[in-house]
Structures are given as structure tokens and as C-alpha cells.
Amino acid sequence: MKPQMFCAKLNSGRAFSNFLFGIVLRNRNVRELFMIDTNKSIEELENDFWGEPAFDSYVVTTCHRARQKPIKLLSQEEIRCLIGQKTGLKYLLPIAVDILKNEPLIDITYFEGDLLLTLLRLEISDWKSNQNELEQFIIILQDNRAQIEQCEEITVVLIEKYVKI
Image (tube, rainbow, N blue to C red; front, side):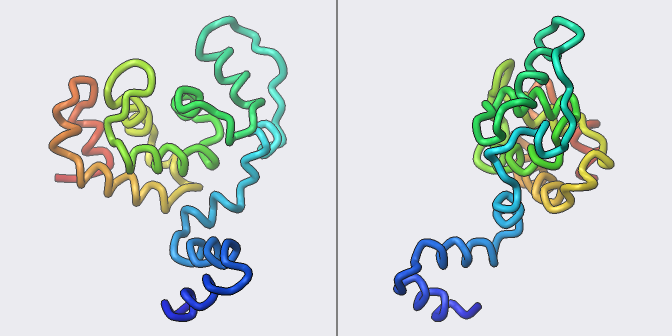
């Protein structure tokens, strides 16, 4: 779509929908988020209902409860916790990467960089449904490497799994 065509459509009666259409054309990540019904829970999207937790721990109860909530209502801590358990990665990695774009060393719950560390602990194969987000994550690591390496909890070995020297 040519820039002038996009501007002309913005001036029409359907400005908002055309504006969104323009964003979707330029940004694959946004396009994929529109395809996900964030009013649905991970349980609904995966058609996999766990029922009540069988073990009473913070991680187990948090993940069970979070899987039942609409994605748009998940807290950053619930997103971090679910990703740490490799749950709902297809739906949550785009959100997590967007969070890290704005603040790579965000302190979600425990320490500065805890969300980043959660993603670094994933295996490359865990990103198979999110190749675009993997590429964006690597760029975040490259662009912020010096700052990230100052974080005590994050080792160079974890960074180098994704970014070679």
C-alpha cells in the first residue's frame, strides 16, 4: 500500500478500521495478535482443560488459575509464570517480547530482568511457533547486551545460546 493511499483512507469515513489495516500490513506481530481472541483463555484456545490443581504450590496454582483467565486479563507475573512452565507459549511469547522491547530488564516480581531470564531459559525449539518473536528477541539481546550482562542473575552462557559473539 502506497503511503498516500494509506493517508487518503485515513481521511475517509472508516478511518479507524483503515488505520488498523495499515498497521496490520506493516507489522506481522500485530497481525498475529489480532488473530488471537484475547477474550479467550489459554484453556479455550488450546481446548485443554486441566481442572483443579493436584499440588498446592505457588507455581501450580498460579498457572492453573491463569490458564482459565482471558489472555487480555493476565498480569505480567502470570505471563512470566506460564512461560516459565512452557504453557501457552504460542499466545504469550508475542506479549512477552513486546514487554521486553520497551524495557528489557523489567522487574516483574523477583528481580530486574526476571522476565528476560524466563525467556532465556527456554530452548530454541520452544519458539517453533513464534519464529518472528524469536528474531525480535535476539535483536533485543543484541541491542541491550552490555546492559543485560550487568544483571547478576543472567549468565553469558544463557545469552550466547541465542546470540553468538
